[in-house]
Image (cartoon, one colour):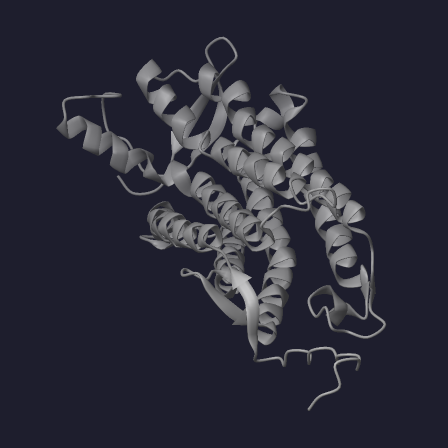
Length: 335
């Protein structure tokens, strides 16, 4: 018979494959929402991206630096999306410590890829605007400095945030393996400050690259109003990326040390969804001008005519001044 006065021994620590970390009903539901949102968004993004690639390589090769950058940015976005997938558990369950560690590690590595993706996409957009609207560099003083500043800011943020990501924990493995002995990381408050700074930069640059062509060019063109509205809608798609970035920033703000009742896995799932959505929407916005010609033809079938005469598919390029200081435009691509 056991001695009732004996001190009970502590329960054994669970092994790496022992199921003991719960995935709540809410986290599972948000994981299903994640796939229900991001996969259709990926398919939709492939449409303008494919249209852009098509008109730049056929019938003649006209691929520029901006096209290479958007291709790399889209590839980084897809890779980031794939790295976030292992943390999406679509049914409530208990997962092992090893499964949790692997999911957190891949999600952690998705952060610099997200940063690289957004830098490549916005640099591509800025280069497109500089090259296609070259005369604005002489007629609008703020045009070129603004776009170059966006590029520089994005690159500086990418480098500094990447350095922070890979140096905030010593050793680095402590960032995702909570069993690391002697691991030291910067505080959660520091993470929130860095994340908030990045969100402010991304929101600001999203708005600038979306509104700049509207303010400087589109409403000065000698084009029918309905055509200009269509172009503004296409170039303004990037503003939706700002909305995704704002939503993500709100979610990250809930990850505070004072919020002890939070469902961490559900919150991480929501942040992952908005992160992927932000990247895909940014690519969609960068490539959406390639849809101008197909949309005009589709609207024409419904009796909505935006302009008379032949029109080509592609990105607009200002080729000179015309009339009373209004910018003329030229479309290149396939009719």
